[in-house]
Length: 88
Image 1 (cartoon, rainbow, N blue to C red):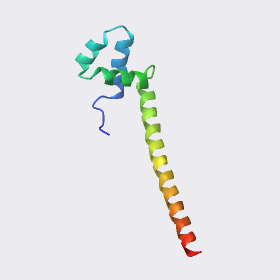
Image 2 (image 1 turned 180 degrees about the vertical axis):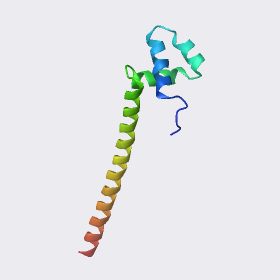
Image 3 (image 1 turned 90 degrees about the vertical axis):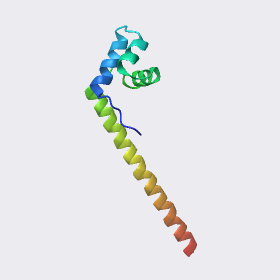
Image 4 (image 1 turned 180 degrees about the horizontal axis):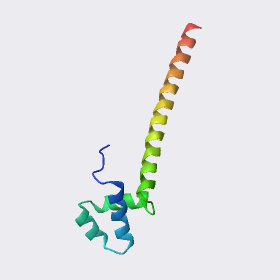
């Protein structure tokens, strides 16, 4: 996944502009983003401060890492069970 060129503070500022009533098309034109990106950010980060956004991103990264570990362990378990079945 490509890293965003926008900081959490910039994303929060862009979302806040939309909440204050600035037209979405104008916000997107000035920021150089698509309206789909704006609405995705709004859905994900609405009402958050930049510190909250950072915590959310860290939790998502940790969750991704833990899911990978669980998948690896499940694969190891399956392989070991297969080896045991073959020996019997």
